[in-house]
Every structure is written in C-alpha cells, then in structure tokens.
Length: 450
Ligand SMILES: [Zn+2]
Image (cartoon, rainbow, N blue to C red; front, side):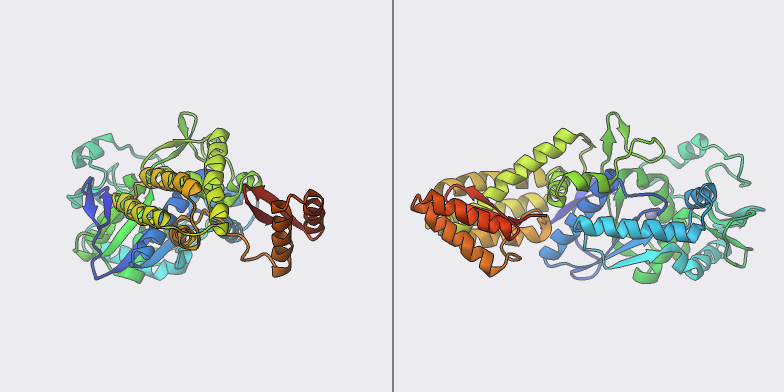
C-alpha cells in the first residue's frame, strides 16, 4: 500500500482517495511573467513522476494545474517593458507549455487560467463576505484571519504568533496585519473585471480555491506544490475553502517538494540566481534532467551544480547500457528471478513515500547482475514497464527505419567475424544516412545524428 508524507498531519499516511481509486489532484502552476527555471523543473518533474506512479498503480488521476495569468508581477513587467499584460502572460504561458513538453511532463489533464474563472472567484469572495469571514475596505476585500480558528494548522504555527509576527504593508488598508486580500480594487492603469464590490482583480490565493471548487467541489484528494507555498499560500487556501463550504478537510493529502538551491540560497527570480531550463536543455538530454530529479527524494533539498548533472548523466548511461545489452541477450532462470525480486523491492520502496533513492539502488544492483548473467526480452519488458513512470530510458530502434537496422545487423555480423574493413565500411554508410552507431560489448546502439 502506498504511503505519502502529509504536510497537514506531519506523518506518512496510507494513501486512500475519498472515492474508490479516483484521485482529484491539483498542483500550483506558474505565474507567467518569465521563463521556467530549473527549480521549477524540479517541482514539476517530481509531481509528474508522482502522478505517473499513481496511474501505474491503477489510480484514476485527474491532474489539474492553474496558470496565474494576472498578478502584480505580470502588471509590473508589462508596464516596465511597455507591453500589454495579457500578451505578456500569453507569451510566457506558451514558453511554459513548451518547456514542460520538452521535459516530457505530459501527465496534466487540464490547465486552468485564473482569468477564465473570474465569475467563480467573485462567487467565492461573495460567499465569504456573506458568511462574515471577509470585509470590504477602500482598496479591496480581505479575509479576516482571526475568524478562522484553525488558521496555521498546515504550517504548524500558532495563530497568535502569526498575528503577532505579521506587518501591515503601508499600501494596504486592512483591519488587521495578518488579514489577506481576496479582491483588489482597481488602481489607475491596471486591468480590471467588474464585480459587486467594484472593479478590480483577484488576489493570488483565491484563484486556486475557485478553480478547484469548480472542477472538484469543496473537497478533494491531493494538493501539492513546492515547500515555500505552505505558508501563507496553502494556509490561506484552507481558510478560504473551509470557511466558504463549512466542510473539512478541504484537501486530504498535502504534498510538498523541497527546494533546489543555488549555493546557500533558494533559486528564485527575485534573487536573480536563476538558470533557465531552456539553457540546461541545450546541454543535457531531458532524460538526464528527469533522472537527476527523480533519483533524489522529493523532500530532499538539492544544491544545483553542473557536476550534479554530469553525475546524473553518467549514472543514467550505466543503466542505459544494460538496456542495450538486454536487447541482444536471452532470458534465463536466474535473470527472471532477479527481475521478479527487483520489481517487488522497487514497488515497496516507492510505496514508502516515493523512496526513489532506494528504488534506484535496487535498479543499479539489478543492472549490474544482469550485465553478468545476461537477460533478454522479459528483462527488457520490465525496464519498459517501470519507464512508464520513470520516463528516463531510451529503447531506441522504435524510430529507426528497418533499412538502417539491417545495415547495423550486417555490421554486427561482420564484427563478430572480425571483418573490420567491412565493419568500417558499413559504419560510414550509416553515417552518410544520418545515423551514428556505437559499439557496446557484443551489441550496438544507433542514434540519429541531430
Ligand atoms: Zn497556488
């Protein structure tokens, strides 16, 4: 049985969705005002892995992600660069979708833009006002934190300490320093929507709960994001939705991924220490990046370095070589037994809060043993099966034309007969046709020259 660490209860719990094997899952998406950096890639690859693993285990997951396309930062950047806020948001949304595609993050069922859910947002704000949880000021509608007694339960903070520790932003006209904004009234030169509380735009926290309430109702199974979203963002979401519906828990399992640091700091736009994923992808295959983030536990903080990527590249290459080797081999009793045992061990590790470091140590041990005793089609099938959620292996050939394979096979035969002249001739022939052949012990791998 799968166990996940739940930030809300602060322990590992058996994962049991609210209804049968159906999982409604929501991950905070990007604020689209700049390029995706490698820290985002860590978050979204790790959740892509979780969703794919859940599906592999037979859960029917609906993966929803929002797109924050209206925000102070978007407006500021649009004003600073003299462009329209909407076209700026659309440009970076397109970049985001392209980057996720380039990372093989394809598990998301629906992207929901905040600005497509304004009526739902207004409706939720309205209910909070009517129920007495929110109040109006001259610059907006605010949620009165004191009214929600359980505020702080996700981040494990005492409400009184939160109240004592919060400061009023001089630009805000709210009653209490800890209150947070639900609706911002229009300021000059800002985009706005009409609402019963005047022209304005939504606050950040409310878009998530309005969107998830629209798709999932007032309660759902799993909400995730990077660890910095626990407070205040996710804490505010709980307050909004549980206050609006009177039902709890709003979300059954809260899952948070640790940071990717740059030196001793978090990687973030405001610190100016970001590395764009586009630039990393120029140098490293997407599978190397996926391997790096999946092989490390999602709750472990990583410090970015190029050495880390180099190590990942080498480790992945070792596993990949086993795959090439298995293509040419035959299964035997020993290899089949090894596969059977490894399968159990890997699933057991992943069921324990996605313990990928253990799962990969099992995989490396298996790979080492198969290299010794051999293995064939059934061993390869196993690698293909786990690749459904790992997404790091290349089984090649599928896209290589038959004609090319034929030449490669001919060359393999020439090599086994030590006919080096013929072998070199065939290598050249392949090169002319745009394919690179690499010898691996008594087999080969072919790659298209890009
Ligand atoms: Zn969010």
